[in-house]
Image: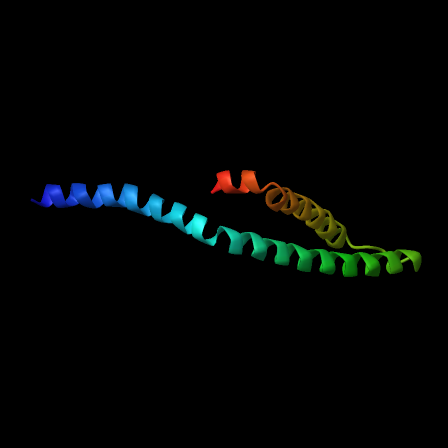
Length: 96
């Protein structure tokens, strides 16, 4: 009896959980994409503000810290990657 219960528990674990994740992905897909777009827009606004500050500092002959340049570079990569994700809806859906 205990073996049957253990077996049933494993079957449920390996079938129900993945199906639940897939259903959740499908149900919340649109909301997740909209949330991504909003967060990318906020990131772009912050990047633009930081870039303007960097431009002013460079015109004034100030040194731009390495971490600031690195952050700007990473942000550009993230924005590009996110744009590809929500720009190609079919790819995002299959990634679910």
